[in-house]
Length: 408
Ligand code: TMP
Image 1 (cartoon, rainbow, N blue to C red):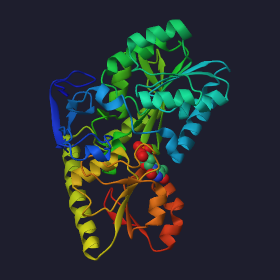
Image 2: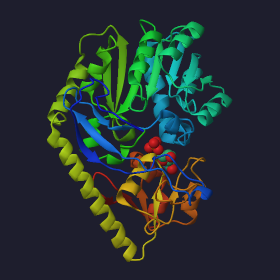
Image 3: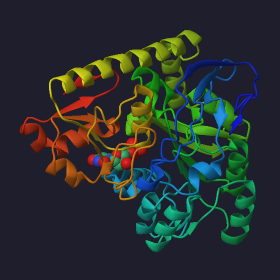
Image 4: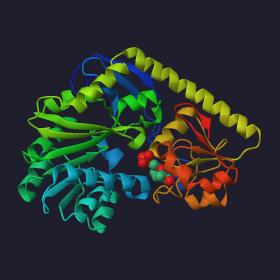
């Protein structure tokens, strides 16, 4: 682990630390039974604000090889994410009409779920995925995938072997990469001059307004708003051609970046106005966010303990990385939750980091329905509540932890 002394974008050395959620284990480090007796590594989780460029960022950086060489998350196990990425591919094709056979590259391509949509449109695709287990799965499914970290030198290699892509994608990647500058130099080197770099990142304004504090974990080094993104891309002679505020992952930005763009389109200025209104350039906003987080912990624990005292059975629904932050920060263990359930095969049969709660497949939830299900995968609330209509009809209740814990 290294501690950053300067801003990830503008190198400003005066960063304001406003929140500390650690020490806490890595959010995706699910354990096997024989690992339960071995002590797990805990790391600080401190969050800072740069008053120069506005970037919210972690103070600590864990080595990418530790975080990403073997990865628990598979995009294809979430039906809502499959639908989301099918929609993204369709939108890009409508917007840019790339010719069939054009090259599409996905940085952090996971199991190939996004690229498979472009394969259906007869495009040439290449995934870049550092997690060996996940890259292998994508290749087996017929999506050409390089098992590597994307950086400037890999960009040179790809360029000479495959040519320049019309489309480069990086969804939920810009927050993750340790060397952001090398990634962007690589994108600039690789992208065709009329190409587009499409990114999706969770939106800071949503994180603050909905108190999505559990999305803060070691993998997420940065929490983006439009203003720091404008600064970031201009450093690499690129600019935002268009930006959309979308609902995925509790509220995200989809940003279309192109070379040689120097003016701000109205979609950008509108979001910059929204950011001013949300006062994301004021340290007080971050101090209030930290207070809101303490309040959630207090309210959630008192709700869960009161239900438990009444004899209720409670389980966790979903075992997302963010769920592990919530459980560890609030110290919710097996004295409260009997188990958690998750659709990802890799997580099933393992135990959650830190709190050591067993993870079962969804079938377990239906076989042993709890009285209350703590919705850890709150970003899929609509889909999950619809899916679990029968459980709710039978009297089961969901507890949604943020922005204020409530029973629905
Ligand atoms: P994500 O928020 O990072 O996409 O992770 C969501 C997790 O929740 C992932 O491990 C899959 C799991 N999940 C379920 O267990 N049931 C569901 O219905 C959905 C949509 C997700």
